[in-house]
Image 1 (cartoon, rainbow over the protein chains, first blue to last red):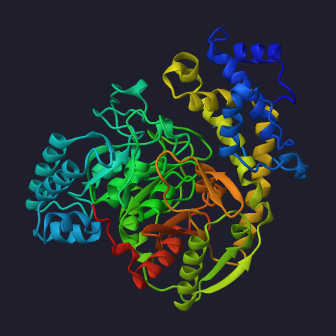
Image 2 (cartoon, each protein chain N blue to C red):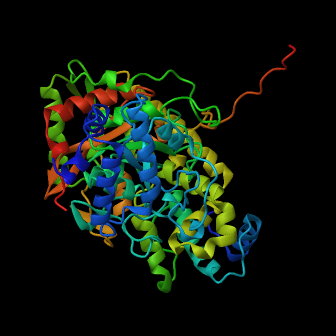
Length: 93
Length: 471
């Protein structure tokens, strides 16, 4: 997640993810991400969408109206909840 | 008893009739098929109806029972499963036309266990595409909207909406759904039936198509609490083929149904009433909690400040895990998906690994604080959803001064327990303007028995579960 996603970074990340960057839909995705990514970091509310893409802002607002900043929490020393099982020992030990 | 009354009987009652030879599985399947014929496509509960296959299975069940090989209370009972549970020889679409003709060559573990118990798959139930997305938005459903039996102009709830409407309308004996942020419990609450999301790991996820590895859980959807316990008895237990399956002893859930809540300590998180909730829903739920107090439970206000972080944690986990689960699909067939769904799946590919890990760290704090509540109380209770069913196509709802999206509202009390993995059940506790209101009961990890016990005692003392939609 990046603070402000510029177009070049977007293309780089989209390509790395395996998306077709020549698909006309990518412009909409770019506008959507510019709205969404700050939102899920709990950043101050402001619409980054152009007037023709206000529906994206509305859509995201509708879906996630009140996200809080996870960065407010003290996560020092907290192991993440991840699925990993310790490797089992050699059978002959 | 007429055919409609038969279709609305509980599984426990039907089982007695079948075991006693008073009705045959063929009679029962025939009655449910007639009801499906009557109500479809008005409710649009099904993507696929398996008339011939179900009748064949019913004939086999009839012969087995006549030969003295009765398998138990699900033998001969027609059911449906959300169309993301793999079903051998029957197409499994995930609610998207992209998979319209995909036919799996094996059953999911839960469908296999239900078949083993003698249940009859009568159809595959409609759902929101990929079990992910806005519940009420127009144009979102490849197989059409799912309609609420109490008022077909309203949503049945998502994403297991077809399973919910089919069970509430008496089109099946019971259903299977899946729940990532409330998708079993939302349709159960909105349609006035009982839905359980058991502890993460209690039910096998093998063959239940993944949306989020760490949030998904299957769950039974039934007309009564006892039926829920009967289905749990058939499906719960370790599955060595599912890495997330818990190797824990499984009790007989029906033994927990004592009808008694005396001495149980019930906690009511005050944070549940700091978020938007329709005043009538709140009043109805508080009345239900008072009823539990009158039955002998003690009620305590508890506080869970980190509750307010559920949406941030759940959003990041779901975005990233959903994107990973469907990466190939969005990269190769994304244009076949409804655009907001496609963008949501793609967006998860742009969330950093560090942010995902921090969400998983936050989850540990969140869960720790929730688990601490269970040192003071045995159960948590509150509303299942803060609103009743809404009009199909309405995306926003105003509660007081707040305008909120329908999906955000529907998940606000339920999604926290996908994060914690704790067992959570909804059951009907009243009506608001003729529409069902759900009461949520949450228990300790792997203590579904106490959840079912409290729900059963409440159900026994009330008659909400006996009310039927007039279709």
